[in-house]
Length: 259
Image (cartoon, rainbow, N blue to C red; front, side):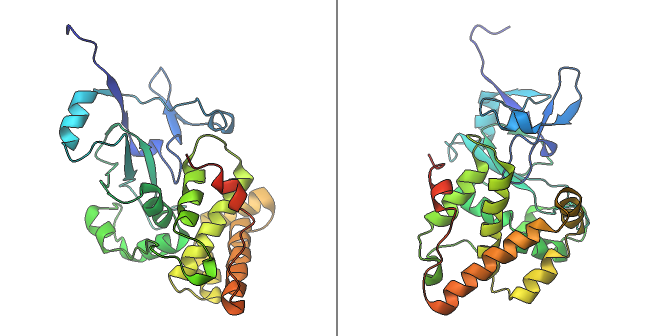
């Protein structure tokens, strides 16, 4: 027993996160793990419970003096090009991590990098490169990553346009599946443009995600994710052609989420 009260931090495992979601799965008292329900996600006070805990001093000692933030950015090491998504990353509260959840100690805005990593165009590139079942540091360092600096004129905004949307998706303040789908589609469309992907190629790339398509068709009767992305892509293309900055219908929604 120690004479002082020690603070314990959760040990996050890869299975506990998903894209823009650090509350993807949680452990029960009996040691079993389950997906977090929609009702729980809609409760901002709900937190995922780990199976193991680690003393805070151990975590901070491993991170060293160079890291003084209360969050980490990590991704699932285990991946396959045949999965629903290949690159799965999330920002999560300061915690210990297992070996299958590598972390990136970035000095940049974490949700900005996260928004690129979670895009379909980045995922498509990753699927062409990853030859095994591990998204290693070596693979990730070789993948083309477009991090917006000064957004193009057609977007008519600052880098905050991307940050606000990523914060909205990462936030636990509200959880609307429809709003999240539309915000993600707009981000995906913007990154398709930034990567210089033509519309017919966007159409093709989206069809290379058969599990996403199958789930959409089962839930909505059509490939809704692709439809939303192409709708936003076309609106952005119209802005490029006309020279009038893209007017997003989501600006008010996403702007109010950022803290």
